Image (cartoon, rainbow, N blue to C red; front, side, top):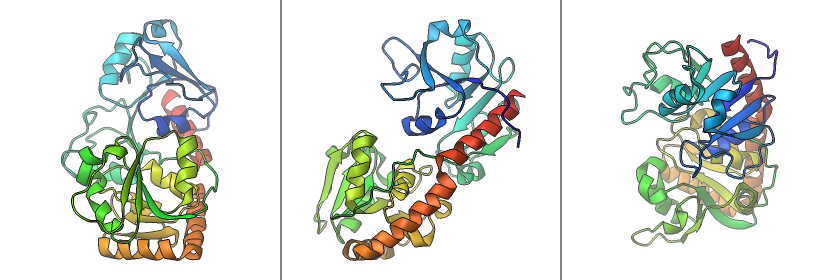
Length: 325
Protein backbone atom coordinates (compact mmCIF):
# COMPACT_ATOMS: atom_id res chain seq x y z
CA UNK A 1 0.00 0.00 0.00
CA UNK A 2 1.07 3.56 -0.64
CA UNK A 3 2.76 5.35 2.23
CA UNK A 4 1.33 8.61 3.51
CA UNK A 5 3.76 11.42 2.66
CA UNK A 6 1.91 14.61 3.47
CA UNK A 7 -0.84 16.13 5.52
CA UNK A 8 -3.92 16.52 3.35
CA UNK A 9 -6.92 18.80 3.46
CA UNK A 10 -9.99 16.59 3.20
CA UNK A 11 -13.53 17.76 2.47
CA UNK A 12 -16.09 15.47 4.13
CA UNK A 13 -19.75 15.90 5.01
CA UNK A 14 -21.14 15.06 8.44
CA UNK A 15 -23.48 12.23 7.44
CA UNK A 16 -22.91 9.35 9.86
CA UNK A 17 -21.71 10.76 13.16
CA UNK A 18 -20.09 7.61 14.55
CA UNK A 19 -18.17 6.82 11.35
CA UNK A 20 -17.07 10.45 10.96
CA UNK A 21 -15.95 10.53 14.59
CA UNK A 22 -13.38 7.86 13.74
CA UNK A 23 -12.47 9.19 10.30
CA UNK A 24 -11.54 12.71 11.47
CA UNK A 25 -9.14 11.36 14.08
CA UNK A 26 -6.50 10.83 11.41
CA UNK A 27 -3.43 12.97 10.75
CA UNK A 28 -5.06 15.28 8.20
CA UNK A 29 -7.11 18.48 8.23
CA UNK A 30 -10.83 17.84 7.79
CA UNK A 31 -13.25 20.43 6.44
CA UNK A 32 -16.93 19.91 7.23
CA UNK A 33 -19.41 22.05 5.23
CA UNK A 34 -21.89 24.16 7.12
CA UNK A 35 -24.94 26.05 5.85
CA UNK A 36 -27.07 28.58 7.63
CA UNK A 37 -29.86 26.54 9.15
CA UNK A 38 -27.86 23.32 8.87
CA UNK A 39 -29.83 20.64 7.07
CA UNK A 40 -28.52 17.44 5.45
CA UNK A 41 -25.94 19.27 3.30
CA UNK A 42 -24.57 21.62 5.93
CA UNK A 43 -24.79 20.12 9.40
CA UNK A 44 -21.28 21.14 10.37
CA UNK A 45 -19.86 19.54 13.50
CA UNK A 46 -23.14 19.62 15.46
CA UNK A 47 -21.14 20.33 18.60
CA UNK A 48 -18.97 17.23 18.24
CA UNK A 49 -15.52 17.25 19.78
CA UNK A 50 -13.46 16.68 16.64
CA UNK A 51 -10.20 18.62 17.14
CA UNK A 52 -8.85 18.01 13.62
CA UNK A 53 -12.12 19.01 11.92
CA UNK A 54 -13.31 22.55 11.28
CA UNK A 55 -16.56 23.92 9.93
CA UNK A 56 -16.31 25.77 6.63
CA UNK A 57 -19.27 27.77 5.24
CA UNK A 58 -20.21 26.38 1.84
CA UNK A 59 -19.78 29.83 0.30
CA UNK A 60 -16.12 29.95 1.42
CA UNK A 61 -15.04 26.64 -0.09
CA UNK A 62 -13.92 28.14 -3.42
CA UNK A 63 -11.35 30.13 -1.46
CA UNK A 64 -10.08 27.01 0.32
CA UNK A 65 -7.34 24.66 -0.82
CA UNK A 66 -8.80 21.14 -0.77
CA UNK A 67 -6.70 18.10 -1.71
CA UNK A 68 -9.37 15.39 -1.80
CA UNK A 69 -13.12 15.07 -1.29
CA UNK A 70 -14.75 12.14 0.48
CA UNK A 71 -18.28 11.68 -0.85
CA UNK A 72 -21.02 9.72 0.86
CA UNK A 73 -24.18 10.59 -1.12
CA UNK A 74 -24.70 10.97 -4.89
CA UNK A 75 -25.84 14.59 -4.50
CA UNK A 76 -22.46 15.55 -3.05
CA UNK A 77 -20.85 15.15 -6.48
CA UNK A 78 -22.85 18.10 -7.84
CA UNK A 79 -22.44 20.06 -4.61
CA UNK A 80 -18.66 19.69 -4.81
CA UNK A 81 -18.67 21.07 -8.34
CA UNK A 82 -20.89 23.99 -7.30
CA UNK A 83 -19.05 24.85 -4.08
CA UNK A 84 -15.45 24.18 -5.13
CA UNK A 85 -15.77 24.85 -8.86
CA UNK A 86 -13.97 21.52 -9.43
CA UNK A 87 -15.36 18.21 -10.73
CA UNK A 88 -14.81 15.23 -8.42
CA UNK A 89 -12.72 12.58 -10.10
CA UNK A 90 -11.60 14.94 -12.88
CA UNK A 91 -10.39 18.19 -11.30
CA UNK A 92 -10.00 16.95 -7.72
CA UNK A 93 -9.33 13.45 -6.36
CA UNK A 94 -12.46 11.91 -4.88
CA UNK A 95 -13.53 8.79 -3.00
CA UNK A 96 -17.12 7.62 -2.51
CA UNK A 97 -17.84 5.88 0.81
CA UNK A 98 -20.82 3.54 0.57
CA UNK A 99 -22.17 2.89 4.07
CA UNK A 100 -25.21 0.82 3.16
CA UNK A 101 -26.32 -2.57 1.93
CA UNK A 102 -27.92 -2.45 -1.53
CA UNK A 103 -31.64 -1.70 -1.83
CA UNK A 104 -34.18 -2.56 -2.98
CA UNK A 105 -32.64 -5.79 -4.28
CA UNK A 106 -29.92 -7.67 -2.46
CA UNK A 107 -27.81 -8.77 -5.43
CA UNK A 108 -29.01 -6.81 -8.47
CA UNK A 109 -29.11 -3.19 -7.29
CA UNK A 110 -26.68 -1.15 -9.41
CA UNK A 111 -24.62 1.45 -7.60
CA UNK A 112 -25.07 5.09 -8.62
CA UNK A 113 -21.34 5.28 -9.49
CA UNK A 114 -21.26 1.97 -11.36
CA UNK A 115 -20.61 3.63 -14.72
CA UNK A 116 -17.69 5.77 -13.50
CA UNK A 117 -14.05 4.77 -13.35
CA UNK A 118 -12.64 8.00 -11.91
CA UNK A 119 -14.08 7.73 -8.38
CA UNK A 120 -13.39 4.56 -6.37
CA UNK A 121 -16.22 3.21 -4.24
CA UNK A 122 -15.11 2.35 -0.72
CA UNK A 123 -17.35 -0.16 1.01
CA UNK A 124 -17.34 -0.49 4.79
CA UNK A 125 -17.76 -4.28 4.63
CA UNK A 126 -16.70 -7.06 2.29
CA UNK A 127 -20.31 -8.23 2.21
CA UNK A 128 -21.45 -4.90 0.77
CA UNK A 129 -18.68 -4.97 -1.84
CA UNK A 130 -19.87 -8.43 -2.87
CA UNK A 131 -23.58 -7.63 -3.02
CA UNK A 132 -23.64 -4.23 -4.74
CA UNK A 133 -23.47 -4.22 -8.54
CA UNK A 134 -20.45 -1.92 -8.73
CA UNK A 135 -20.27 -2.03 -12.53
CA UNK A 136 -16.90 -0.82 -13.81
CA UNK A 137 -16.17 1.38 -10.80
CA UNK A 138 -12.99 0.48 -8.90
CA UNK A 139 -13.76 -0.66 -5.36
CA UNK A 140 -11.95 -0.94 -2.05
CA UNK A 141 -13.00 -2.16 1.39
CA UNK A 142 -12.06 -0.24 4.52
CA UNK A 143 -13.75 -1.95 7.49
CA UNK A 144 -15.03 0.07 10.39
CA UNK A 145 -12.80 1.19 13.23
CA UNK A 146 -14.10 2.83 16.37
CA UNK A 147 -12.82 4.91 19.23
CA UNK A 148 -12.36 2.50 22.14
CA UNK A 149 -14.86 3.37 24.91
CA UNK A 150 -13.00 1.07 27.29
CA UNK A 151 -13.91 -2.21 28.96
CA UNK A 152 -16.79 -0.74 30.97
CA UNK A 153 -18.83 -3.93 31.26
CA UNK A 154 -20.32 -4.79 34.66
CA UNK A 155 -23.43 -6.72 33.59
CA UNK A 156 -25.02 -5.87 36.92
CA UNK A 157 -28.50 -5.47 35.37
CA UNK A 158 -29.78 -8.88 34.17
CA UNK A 159 -31.38 -7.45 31.04
CA UNK A 160 -30.62 -7.53 27.36
CA UNK A 161 -29.99 -4.26 25.56
CA UNK A 162 -30.53 -3.39 21.90
CA UNK A 163 -29.71 -0.21 19.96
CA UNK A 164 -32.10 0.40 17.06
CA UNK A 165 -32.85 3.75 15.46
CA UNK A 166 -36.48 4.17 14.37
CA UNK A 167 -37.46 0.62 15.40
CA UNK A 168 -41.13 1.06 14.44
CA UNK A 169 -40.50 2.40 10.94
CA UNK A 170 -37.61 0.12 10.06
CA UNK A 171 -39.28 -3.01 11.45
CA UNK A 172 -38.04 -6.16 9.75
CA UNK A 173 -34.93 -4.46 8.35
CA UNK A 174 -33.53 -3.97 11.86
CA UNK A 175 -35.23 -7.03 13.32
CA UNK A 176 -37.41 -5.00 15.67
CA UNK A 177 -40.08 -7.65 15.21
CA UNK A 178 -37.77 -10.23 16.83
CA UNK A 179 -37.54 -8.43 20.15
CA UNK A 180 -40.71 -10.07 21.56
CA UNK A 181 -39.15 -13.50 21.03
CA UNK A 182 -36.14 -12.45 23.10
CA UNK A 183 -38.42 -10.87 25.69
CA UNK A 184 -39.91 -14.30 26.30
CA UNK A 185 -36.48 -15.22 27.70
CA UNK A 186 -35.70 -12.03 29.61
CA UNK A 187 -36.20 -8.26 29.86
CA UNK A 188 -35.01 -6.13 26.94
CA UNK A 189 -34.04 -2.46 27.16
CA UNK A 190 -34.14 -0.59 23.85
CA UNK A 191 -32.13 2.54 23.04
CA UNK A 192 -31.97 4.66 19.90
CA UNK A 193 -33.83 7.35 17.98
CA UNK A 194 -37.54 6.69 18.40
CA UNK A 195 -36.98 3.85 20.86
CA UNK A 196 -39.31 5.44 23.39
CA UNK A 197 -42.15 5.12 20.83
CA UNK A 198 -41.67 1.38 20.42
CA UNK A 199 -44.79 -0.66 21.15
CA UNK A 200 -45.50 -4.39 21.01
CA UNK A 201 -48.83 -6.10 20.44
CA UNK A 202 -49.55 -8.98 22.77
CA UNK A 203 -47.76 -10.44 25.76
CA UNK A 204 -43.99 -10.89 25.61
CA UNK A 205 -43.39 -12.59 28.93
CA UNK A 206 -40.89 -9.93 30.05
CA UNK A 207 -40.95 -6.19 29.41
CA UNK A 208 -39.47 -4.48 26.37
CA UNK A 209 -38.64 -1.02 27.61
CA UNK A 210 -38.08 1.68 24.99
CA UNK A 211 -35.80 4.20 26.72
CA UNK A 212 -34.65 6.71 24.10
CA UNK A 213 -31.60 8.19 22.41
CA UNK A 214 -28.52 9.40 24.32
CA UNK A 215 -25.03 10.71 23.65
CA UNK A 216 -22.34 8.02 23.69
CA UNK A 217 -20.85 9.33 26.92
CA UNK A 218 -24.13 8.42 28.64
CA UNK A 219 -25.13 5.49 26.46
CA UNK A 220 -21.99 3.37 26.73
CA UNK A 221 -21.99 3.09 30.55
CA UNK A 222 -25.71 2.28 30.46
CA UNK A 223 -25.17 -0.42 27.85
CA UNK A 224 -22.32 -1.87 29.89
CA UNK A 225 -24.54 -2.24 32.96
CA UNK A 226 -26.80 -4.63 31.02
CA UNK A 227 -25.85 -8.28 30.89
CA UNK A 228 -26.17 -9.03 27.15
CA UNK A 229 -26.15 -7.03 23.92
CA UNK A 230 -28.74 -8.04 21.28
CA UNK A 231 -28.12 -7.41 17.58
CA UNK A 232 -31.18 -8.31 15.51
CA UNK A 233 -30.51 -6.58 12.16
CA UNK A 234 -31.58 -8.55 9.10
CA UNK A 235 -30.40 -6.20 6.35
CA UNK A 236 -28.20 -3.33 7.44
CA UNK A 237 -24.52 -2.71 7.09
CA UNK A 238 -22.38 -3.83 10.02
CA UNK A 239 -23.75 -1.87 12.98
CA UNK A 240 -21.25 0.26 14.86
CA UNK A 241 -23.27 -0.34 18.02
CA UNK A 242 -22.36 -4.04 17.78
CA UNK A 243 -18.66 -3.19 17.57
CA UNK A 244 -19.07 -0.72 20.45
CA UNK A 245 -20.69 -3.43 22.57
CA UNK A 246 -17.80 -5.78 21.86
CA UNK A 247 -15.31 -3.03 22.74
CA UNK A 248 -17.20 -2.55 26.02
CA UNK A 249 -16.53 -6.28 26.72
CA UNK A 250 -20.21 -7.22 26.51
CA UNK A 251 -21.31 -10.70 25.42
CA UNK A 252 -23.29 -10.41 22.20
CA UNK A 253 -26.22 -12.37 20.79
CA UNK A 254 -26.29 -11.70 17.06
CA UNK A 255 -28.34 -12.58 14.00
CA UNK A 256 -25.97 -14.18 11.46
CA UNK A 257 -26.68 -11.81 8.58
CA UNK A 258 -24.65 -9.53 6.31
CA UNK A 259 -21.12 -8.94 7.72
CA UNK A 260 -21.88 -10.13 11.26
CA UNK A 261 -20.51 -13.62 10.68
CA UNK A 262 -17.10 -12.08 9.90
CA UNK A 263 -17.20 -9.60 12.77
CA UNK A 264 -18.32 -11.87 15.63
CA UNK A 265 -16.34 -14.97 16.59
CA UNK A 266 -18.41 -17.74 18.26
CA UNK A 267 -16.57 -17.32 21.56
CA UNK A 268 -17.82 -13.70 21.82
CA UNK A 269 -21.36 -14.85 22.54
CA UNK A 270 -23.81 -16.44 20.12
CA UNK A 271 -24.34 -15.92 16.39
CA UNK A 272 -26.90 -17.80 14.30
CA UNK A 273 -29.92 -17.42 12.03
CA UNK A 274 -31.84 -19.79 14.34
CA UNK A 275 -33.83 -17.40 16.51
CA UNK A 276 -34.93 -20.15 18.90
CA UNK A 277 -31.30 -21.08 19.57
CA UNK A 278 -30.35 -17.44 20.00
CA UNK A 279 -33.12 -16.83 22.51
CA UNK A 280 -31.96 -19.88 24.46
CA UNK A 281 -28.40 -18.52 24.52
CA UNK A 282 -29.74 -15.12 25.54
CA UNK A 283 -31.49 -16.77 28.50
CA UNK A 284 -28.31 -18.65 29.38
CA UNK A 285 -26.14 -15.50 29.43
CA UNK A 286 -28.71 -13.66 31.53
CA UNK A 287 -28.52 -16.37 34.17
CA UNK A 288 -24.82 -17.24 33.93
CA UNK A 289 -22.93 -13.99 34.62
CA UNK A 290 -19.52 -15.69 34.73
CA UNK A 291 -20.09 -17.13 31.27
CA UNK A 292 -21.17 -13.68 30.07
CA UNK A 293 -17.95 -12.13 31.37
CA UNK A 294 -15.77 -14.67 29.56
CA UNK A 295 -17.59 -14.16 26.27
CA UNK A 296 -17.32 -10.40 26.62
CA UNK A 297 -13.57 -10.55 27.15
CA UNK A 298 -13.13 -12.66 24.02
CA UNK A 299 -15.27 -10.28 22.01
CA UNK A 300 -13.33 -7.24 23.18
CA UNK A 301 -9.99 -8.77 22.23
CA UNK A 302 -11.27 -9.63 18.75
CA UNK A 303 -12.81 -6.19 18.22
CA UNK A 304 -9.64 -4.37 19.25
CA UNK A 305 -7.58 -6.45 16.83
CA UNK A 306 -9.90 -6.19 13.83
CA UNK A 307 -11.96 -3.03 14.35
CA UNK A 308 -9.68 -0.78 16.33
CA UNK A 309 -9.11 2.86 15.46
CA UNK A 310 -5.41 2.54 14.59
CA UNK A 311 -5.83 -0.03 11.83
CA UNK A 312 -8.81 1.91 10.43
CA UNK A 313 -6.79 5.12 10.18
CA UNK A 314 -3.77 3.36 8.65
CA UNK A 315 -5.98 1.93 5.93
CA UNK A 316 -7.45 5.34 5.23
CA UNK A 317 -4.04 6.99 5.17
CA UNK A 318 -2.88 4.51 2.55
CA UNK A 319 -5.98 5.01 0.42
CA UNK A 320 -5.85 8.81 0.59
CA UNK A 321 -2.18 8.69 -0.39
CA UNK A 322 -3.02 6.44 -3.34
CA UNK A 323 -5.78 8.63 -4.79
CA UNK A 324 -3.84 11.89 -4.34
CA UNK A 325 -0.53 10.56 -5.72
